[in-house]
Amino acid sequence: MQPIHFKFPSKQQELIWQKRRNRTPPSIIAQELDVSRALVSKAQRIAEERIEKILRHTASTNRIRIQKISPRYGFASGYCYANKSDVYIVYSPTLGTQLWFNHEGDCNNCIEQPVCEKTIHTLAQEWNLPLPKGIPATEAAEELFIAIMRRLKWIE
Picture 1 (cartoon, rainbow, N blue to C red):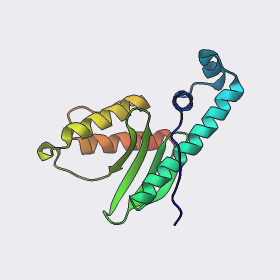
Picture 2: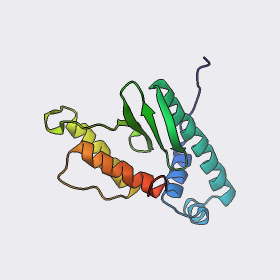
Picture 3: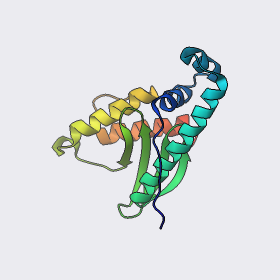
Picture 4: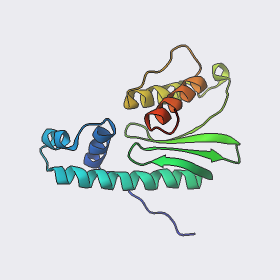
């Protein structure tokens, strides 16, 4: 098997990608960054190509079968047969690539609880989605990923 070589998006590509993900029109991005619309389009295309490779590489190295993928939004859903679990792969400018196995956990007795909560809250902020308060991280994550998939029109 050939090793996969990939690059992360540059800071400018990532900024443009994030603005497009938040539905900012290319003309506005070009104005804000004082660049041409052609540069915005090219940076967006390169960022999406790189993000897709990252998402696919993450899935491959973790033996996850991708079911749906959106490089434009940096999100993929799949299934891990080893863990018998749905899996979400998210590319985050703040957190890097995140892998989330859908599971029912006992968050109150888990030493990873603060990390999970911070991850979920950061992703919710990046996606500009509300997050229910007072529920365990596993439930909040499920709500968040359902909201993301609705935004992508993968589910109703």
